[in-house]
Length: 49
Image (cartoon, rainbow, N blue to C red; front, top):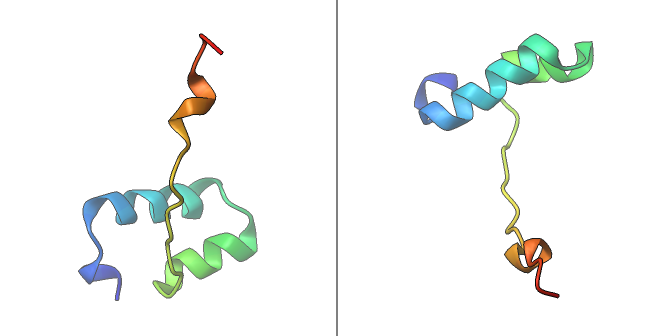
């Protein structure tokens, strides 16, 4: 349910609604999309390599 999401997820969905494609926007409005996060490999930013 959209009301049960934390503020970060609501913010992400708001951006998708505003700037996403029509299909993505429609999915974001329904409140049914699953938001998943990927781990970031911070060693990619290592300038000393």
